[in-house]
Image (cartoon, rainbow, N blue to C red; front, side, top):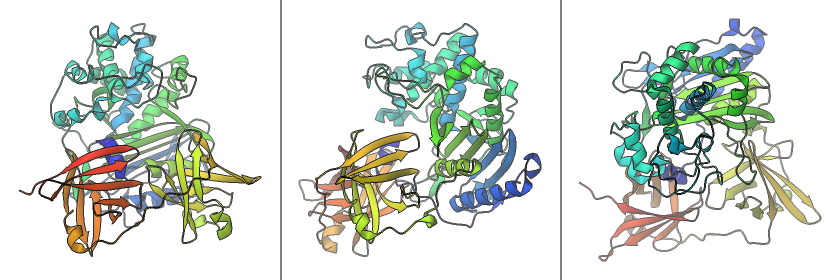
Length: 563
């Protein structure tokens, strides 16, 4: 379902300032210039209050510099029904940040001699069908095993509410075809970390829940961290929220489903304690810590940008160790910058307003390497902009269309979203709502562009191909009315088609509403994203299904019938 949601999802930061904050900036603990700490607090307040309104689900945030908490606040509501504001001590489901704890637990057991990173999974699951391949714990830890991730399986959506044992859920995905041979690709994989939880149980003799609690939470002093449960009374729990056409309480998910891939709950301060424990080698020794933070390679030598439980990236030239999490009703992010000794954690109780963008901007500010604001745009001659328009082929296989409208440049990856480009004084163009940027160079009649998105880079060359143009035709309201309805792409994820002021509008579950434009009598296109919708008529001439075309995929959807 997450893949389908991404097809039409546009990341937009809300520009509203109506949010109230709870909590205090820990200026006395900063150990530095109080005025500098106050300046940081003002900047962080502005970023978070833009994103999280006082009457909506919100987030708790913490920033620590040199081991001291300099900022810790809450924004928005922990419970909408009771009008309870978020405080920093609120407990959130942290989703895939859980993978850090699973990876460290494996390394702890390796140090005890109970495991080896080269152990094959058949040592613990003797009947697992590896299709003749050698799949090791290292492959699981680095998302390079090739095993099918169960959260990408349509059949899994029917199991969300079921309490399953680890072996019962492993049996759900073990017979699926492998996505690739071990070590050949990196593909984020929840099945891999689920299996690692079972390995921890086999090696330790404890349940995964008990091992994490006794061997990690208790020694580190993480007194507000838990294995998730809807039944257990958890003090200061922030309720989770999702959005369809309105905000709703999050869908129930049995915590036996995410298990070692995403079942844990915590607070921003407990995650700070966790970061301190890893830095001080409290749980694993320095050699094991270095293994956790190694940027591993595929069989062909290409680095994957992932260690054991942490993504390895950068912010404006400073290295980061980070991970985000997403689970029904919650999205989370934590970032550590070792060179500057800065830690940032932002936990939100909404899965439609995640903190990844704002937490990265906060980290950049904390290390005094802020990203440019869009108000910093510089003027660029329109002739110069026009010379950059065209189709660019990149060395990573991507194709991007650079277009110009009303004196501004736009970039759109084939099959992707169209982004406004903001020019900055250093000659770069930043994507709106993103940390990606382009730097164009022109020499000897040749135009190249460097695309950079955090640690990822690729080079594109301008081609002679024409920029594809989709021609809009005019259809009357009576014709457009035939397409109105709700089309189900997958259980729980729909596209609603409505007619408003003689315009046909589309809205994916939990997303913004966008106009679609007719290119034929039954095929429409979106301007904000490189996607098309084709409505299909049945034998009676009624449009009862449609196909979403995007990124080379054709995804069918059936029209829901009214009750």
